[in-house]
Image 1 (cartoon, rainbow, N blue to C red):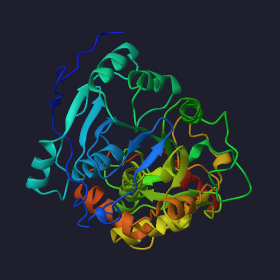
Image 2: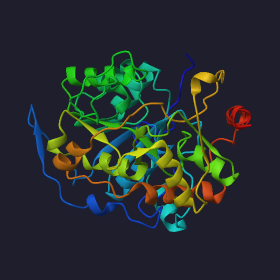
Image 3: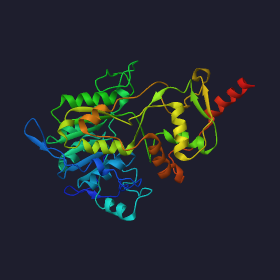
Image 4: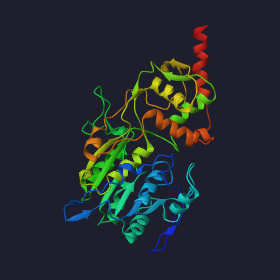
Length: 380
């Protein structure tokens, strides 16, 4: 593997600029739930952590989506934040709706450590030299990528992990709760194995399991898939009845939850589902996207996916099943509560991203045309 060079010196990481202040990104401040003074908690070995004190925090990732918002909240709370990335994306960029002053302030405080987390020797040497207090692992997918971080930081106070509700075993009994059976063969098995690794090590950890995440800068085609079709004035093809129930959680609410577990004794070695409070059908989501973005009521076309061969293309951005989880534990244990309802959150995403002409993927209506072509033949 090619050798990697840390952008920062041994004593002081290099400053670089990342996307800016999260709290004002949508004109609605996110710090409401984060300003309360949190309790000091204690783990075995008399280790003490308090979220009200400034921490030296490492974020694995941080230049896309969740990390963009999380890093801003942490900087606003007075923490020293370093992003560990490969350096392929700009470390800072000004966000839509962000003032020049907020961006400059954030950019002057964020730090960057350049490297590949799969270069385990580099991870161990660079992290041990910095002695971070807390690690937020936003982009970890495999347990073997986490072990070197734990080895490098024996005095680590807290490891906060972004897992996924996709680890749950499919069931007829919904919503999913944190005690539900998990699926060791799921495509998220690496995250499940990471949670098991954290449980087995002498480290204080917390794992958050989001369902579908949406919001500005989303690199997954969740709401963007609907917005492309609404803008083009096209029908929206939805598999089967359209009554499948799913759940979306806003990225800013997820970022707030990540900050809320920092130094929180109630979050010690706990898993929390994080998403929106309400569930929605596929048809309902299409209508919510239209309402949020100011488009007319959409024309929804239902189809049977088994009648088509889409090849490697994905005709619909959600798994074709009921999939949603209870967030009661996070609400009752952490006192966390999502700020955004679905329509408000979709409007936030549209107004600050797609509605400004920015999106991650170009529209591709090829699978739609296959579906609509057959529908027209059947109608004729």
